[in-house]
Amino acid sequence: MASSKKLIYMVDWTKIRKDFPALERRINGRPVVYLDSACMALKPRQVIDAMNEYYEMYPACAGRSIHRFGEEASNAYSAARGKFAKFLNAAQEEECIWTRNATESLNIVASSVKLPKGSKIITTSLEHHSGSLPFVERAKRDGLEIEIVKAQMDGTFDIEDWKCAIDNNTSLVSVVHSSNVTGTVSSMKDIVEIAHDRGALVMCDDAQYAPHHPLDVQEMDVDFSCISVHKMCGPTGMGVLYGKMEHLESMNMALYGGDTVSDVKFEDGQILPEYLPPPEKFEAGLQNYAGAIGAGAAAEYLQAIGMHEIEKHERSLLKVALKRLLDMEHVHILGTDNINIKTGLVTFSVDTVPSAHDVATFLNDEFNVMVRSGWHCVGPFHYQMGIDPKKGTARASFYLYNNLDDVKAFLDGLETLIEASA
Ligand SMILES: Cc1ncc(COP(=O)(O)O)c(C=O)c1O
Image (tube, rainbow, N blue to C red):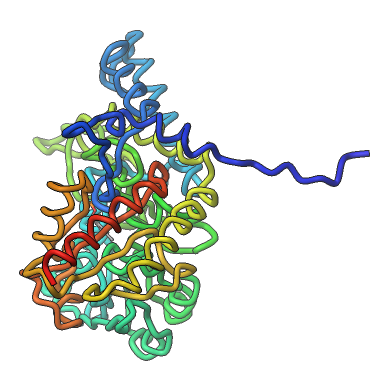
């Protein structure tokens, strides 16, 4: 008889830390505390090795050259797409398009999706500029209506606001799944249901969600999703656009040229192209093969650890951080402190210090603690909250390689700064 005991899988987070060479550095004889993963994640040895292997062993063009190196590059490139599709649980790997970053993915959708004349696009005050501006510009270009759903003060959305905003004339909704400024997780299931009921497509910005939570694009039923590979332990200059095949097929192309065609005839003095289906349709020219291979390795690396485990680990760090931060005089947290609807980051201002850059500089110089400062490319929400974007906010973001010592170093540093400045 099979045992009814469940195997409990425990992640050795200390061992995970050792995968990241950057964490071996000492600056002024002290360890580094990296809390800026919401901007850029550190890279594990497994990703670096996969990319180095490409450059050292088979640095050729995939899909074109039939020689040995070309074949190896083609195989690795194609396997990488498969790994990424598995990471997102896409129905087919051809639904995953390689791009340069999440911004490019969002721009491709904004510029190339066919939307009815006179229809309405909806986006929000909490979007990263990359999630709102491409759609604001598309609306301007085609004379479409645009409506902005306002996030609430805690960074969540009131579902009633979505019900009011999305009407039968709405063709597309662009919404952030997890905010890079408040960390709040949007209720995508509800938003998608309302949008689809009223015939609108949903573009979900998963740049912050995908690295930190289990993501299943089929279960979410979103029409498009964008991923920022550099935020999920992968290489820089890589992103992914996920789209349901029917939409990718009907969209206009964004770039034309080599590798997008099955045939280009020359008849009666005319050049007559026949274009390939997705993903090649959207991947013109020689691609970033090393980047795609690194992206596949990153997806595989995170999945092997387990996205549920990563989510739990980060939330445990966030809980400790929030508990002490909430007790700190002069510290104001942006967005909810409910960790159950929050990705592992905290954004805050300190009212005894002139600007968030001063907070980041002090923590960096005195404690080797690296946090982000500025407006995080989310100007509208800073204005909505009455925060001068020039003064900005500071953000500490946690990832799988962070530990309680990192959280303590950050909080000790912040307390020292407040004591010195109050
Ligand atoms: C929520 C969100 N969307 C989009 C982006 C843009 O991502 P990328 O740098 O990959 O273009 C970011 C980057 O910080 C982000 O946090």
